Image (tube, rainbow, N blue to C red; front, side):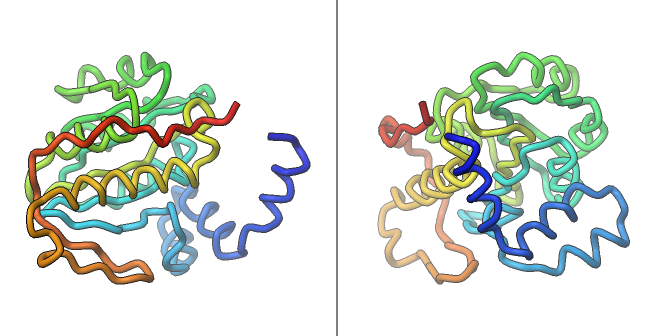
Amino acid sequence: MDANSTLYGERRRSLAEVIADRAFELHSEPLRESMTRFNHVEHRLERFLLSDGVEFINDSRATNVNSTWYALETMTAPVIWIAGGQDKGNNYFELRDLVKDKVKAIVCIGEDNRRIHGAFGDLVPKIIDAGSMAEAVQCAYNLSEPGYVVLLSPACASFDRFYNYEERGRQFKHEAKYLNSLQPAKALQNNVVQGGSLLVGSKMDVVPPENKRGAKAA
């Protein structure tokens, strides 16, 4: 990806997206509350699936620790956290208090997850390294219980395995919906509505086939 295409992509972002990005990086509660009234920003705390009491949230836009700090802070249910990617020298220890209080397990999607293990290994009983997004979603789903949240909020860039954070978020949503669709008679149970509404289904224990969609850029 060359510099010109990156700049062009940045210029195309909407004002709402830019403001939402900045809002989620603030630790000031009044500013965050006033700035996060921009709704339905894709890949930013995007609630898209509820399956047998387990909610899936896509926060792939969280490419740094501050954004993930805010995402975890807003969670009111136990969290299975999908994290990791291309580490930018992150200080994960800023997240330790939130992880201790809210995270039940971590599923890592980065090429090198040693720093995540080092930062949270004494706080979280289960930290699993996943080889693909399909595997990560399956693991997170199996570790969850009704009332839990499966949160993709990587705190890292996406370029180790994906073309960009949008592709990472789209793969997460695709794999979660695919897993949900494997339940028998799902067509009678699902309620799919465009525009940000939840897809509602039932939980099941099925392993999806190998993820062959592939995807990191050269």
